[in-house]
Image 1 (cartoon, rainbow, N blue to C red):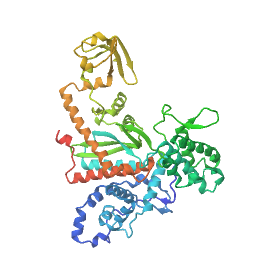
Image 2: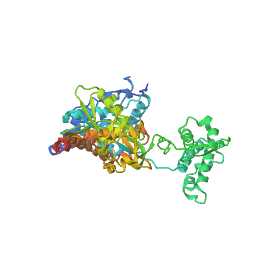
Image 3: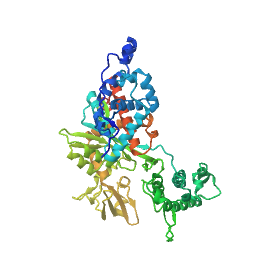
Image 4: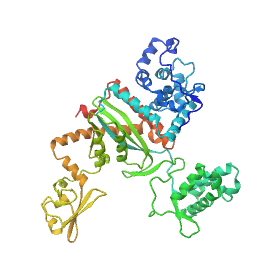
Length: 542
C-alpha cells in the first residue's frame, strides 16, 4: 500500500468569508466587478464542488503531524493555472496579488496564501506515486466527479454521449538510432564518472564530454554513419557487463540495456558482437524513443508519425450544451476499440437506454455485444475511410454469412474463401461471367486470365444495408452532426491548452496535467453556459 507519511490529512474549513476578510476593505465598485467576473462562478460552481476526501489516502491519518496544504485550494489553483495558461510561479503570483484568484479560491481570509511552488510539486508527486503503487488516478476521479456536478448544473441529459480520441505528442526530441544509443551510453558514462568509478569507463571518457555528442552524431562526416553507429554499439556492449554489479538498478543502466536489446541483434559469430537490426527484423511500437521519456511510444496515424501518448474523450451532450464527463490516457499504440471496451466495462448498467456515438474506428460486433449488456447502444458514423460500395448489398450470402451464393446479375460464383482476420469473403467468378456484365464498373473485380476476383467486406456490406432507408439516412445524418461536435475538444486542447507541449514527461506525470486541462475545458463550457452561449448546434439546427 501507498504509505502516506509526514503530513496529516485535514479538510479545509475556511469555506466562508470571515468578518475580517480583506474583501471588506474593497470599494463597492470593485466588489461589483468581482461579483460579475469569472471569479464568482468559479467560486460558486467549481471550488465548492472539489471533493477533498478523494485525496485523503495521500496523507497520514495521524493528527500529530503537520497538516497538508488545503487540497481544494491546490486543485482549484491548478485548474485556474491551465485555464489561464500560467506556470506554477505565475499562478502563485496571481494568488498573492489578484483578488479575483483569492475570491475564486476562498483565500481572502488568509494572512498568507497557502500555495507555493513546492506545495504544487509535492502534491503532484504524491498523486503520481499513489497511482504507481495502487493503479488509482485520484486526479481523474476528482475531475470526473467535478464534471458530473457541472453536467447536473447545466441540466444536460446523460443518455447521449459521444467519443473521440486524439494523439498527444511527448515533449521530446525525435532521435535517430545513432543519437539514441549515443545519448543512453553518454548518460551512463556521466553517472559513473560523477561517482568517481573511472576504472569502469576507461577508454570511454569522451562520452562524458558535453561537446562530444554533436561531434559524433553530426560533424564526423568523413566517417560513415554505419561505422559511427557500430562504434557506439561496441562501446555500450562492452560497458554494460563491466558495470552491471554496481549500476544494474539505476535508470541510466536500464535504459542503455533496453536500447541495445531493442536496436541491435547478435551477429551470429558466437563472440557476442552486436550489430544494428535491419528493417526486415522490425521493431515494436513501444521501443525507446528518447531516454528523456521512456514511456513514449511510436505510431503512424493518417500518414503522420507520432511519438508520445493518446487520450480518449467521452462527452455528454444535449441541446443545452456538452461536458467532458470522462477521459482515458495511455500510450499512443493503443487502439480506439480497446478504449471503448474499457469505457463500457467500467460503465454501470442503466435502466434507460443510453447512446454512445463514435466514428467507425470504434465499431465492431464485440463492442456492440458488450455495450448491449449495459443497455448502451453504440452508434458509429462513416468517418472511417471511404463510403462503402452500395453494390455490396446486392450480393446474396449463404445462411452462415460466409459464402457468396449469387452476384447482382444472379451469377453463381466459381469459388469462395472466408477471411476471418478481416471478416471478408474472397469470391471468384469465371471471367466470361463478369467481363460483359452491366455491373462490371460497380463491382470492379480484378480480371485475371480465366477468373474475376472480388473481396467482399462483410462490415462494409452491413453498413450499406443499414443506410438503405431514407428514414435511417436522416437519423444517420443527425448522428454524424452530433459526433462531429466532439472534434472541437481535441482542437481546443491542442491549440489553447497546448497539450502537445506539457512541461513534464512520462505517462503518469503528463496524464496528471492532462486531467487538469480537461477540468479547464469544462470550466470554459460552464462559463459559456452561464453567458447563454453554450449549446449543441446539431440539436438546435437539426
